[in-house]
Length: 125
Image (cartoon, rainbow, N blue to C red; front, side, top):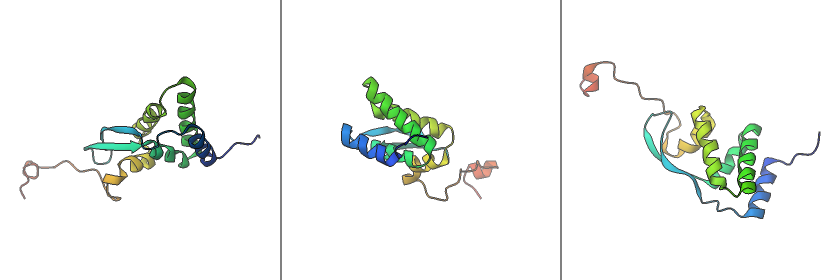
């Protein structure tokens, strides 16, 4: 097998060579939190998106592919990484969900249960 650079080394070289705006938001929109099912305004920077690559080799490849595709086609890395993050949220990747929504979500958050009676719905006991 040939030499493959580590994701961390690739990330450092990419940032040094192309000097992307790491503060640029990849996601800045309201999204439904899959855990609480509430709509939240999410801000997720390019630097945060690069951190996804440390989760697994699969995600490292997805991040590298999206960023290099954007670089080669003249597109925005943020736009393609936006799609990667949204796809992973839709697939139910708990680690990415925690990264994206973790700042506003307690660690032991559980989905809210629907009221089981009409008086619970009305807030009566």
